[in-house]
Length: 400
Image (cartoon, rainbow, N blue to C red; front, side):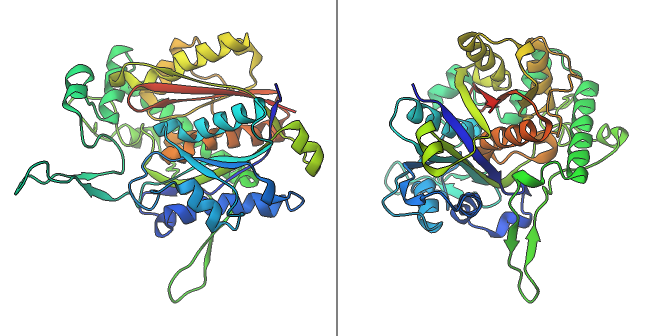
């Protein structure tokens, strides 16, 4: 089988909910990193891209009707190039990279753009159609995050706990204290702040021009979700979902906007376009867990992948674990037999500090890992994350 190489990886800065990126349509947001790839790699014949694969979790608003196809057309790529949008909820961006890897491995493609996009700020309200004549029972759902149009059988069998409730379930089941969660969140903010201050993430971010009425355009170039705060201040926040709970706004990931794109090529494409690979994709694997404790999804996904690849944790220089919640991050770290202060885990912060635009996040993890490997001369990275409705996904990449 052919190998799949990451030749470039770039993302937008991550915007807060209702923040700087909120004025940009989701399809236009997806265009930004695709155009950046094209500008940074002008020697590529972009008409020969075999496919554009983007992850997106919502798809109820401006991201409907196959946002990958919309974005490639809006970016100026040829109308002959197909595009597909994949949805593995929080893991959608990583799933897109996995699908690109598999297509190249079996010889179905040589050059693919893969990534993800999510504008949670612009997620619409949706209303179901009446199920009977003259019905006055109208339900409206906010599609930003979580369940909608719930199947009663699903509710009876598995429950339909909100994401925050699943984090509380994990905290309770695995005895994750509020103090430990707050410390984890504090450390995430500290690491993100230091990375931003040092410019460590500058190469992976493409600035976004924000048009403002009656003033000059603003060049948005730094993640705006980080909230540097004292541990004491974090400890004062109230639990979100239940009295006596431990999950707060401070030890949870954000509701955010952003997009990422990676240029993935076969060895044939490397030679044809004189591309210089940054990393090799070794494997991508998903696994399922009970929906009410979806946060532990990275554990079986990682174990499954490492078993197939015959790797152990000693084989990794970097571990990017998406921080959906501090409770599930700590549970996964402990269940995987890692130390909570392991310097390999999220050295530049994670979703608690940087944000979690659902469809983008998996591609963001891989993008961040690639650039850390290049910048710090690291050899191998594990990227893994939990997924709503009870899944996990993991990927392994190696520096070339």
